[in-house]
Image (cartoon, rainbow, N blue to C red; front, side, top):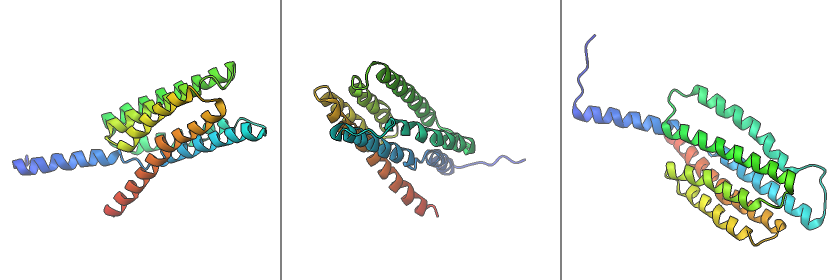
Length: 196
């Protein structure tokens, strides 16, 4: 078997192509961000409405988040199996979001045991952490801004009643996930048209 000799220019071109393939392997469609943004906004507004209009819908609306988690885990596992290359950044994000999910569930159990109004500030602060890290690692400004927005909103929530916190929580869902998700979806669709 002959060894093929590459010129410096050909070597750089090959390296560039490999880097491009690795970057394309982490093309987020933004669907997960859109789903979570919509759910957070919906659950927050429903909770606000329950308090404002003194209505009881008969179950905890936040349980919808559990239902959304199951298909997301399924599709994440399926997508991971189909990939030939998983970058270090992508692997890091996997652990960041698992940590976030565990912390949110622990906080939720704390809320259910000690009264749900005590830690909305903490939850909004937690929303900002993985969003900010994701935006920073992938140089995606809408998520960086979304994470910082969650932190600013969480500071305001220290001084607001629980009912208002639900509207602030909806704002976190909008800025941290829905808007960045829509931007990612549009970029993904545009990229798909280029590669067709």
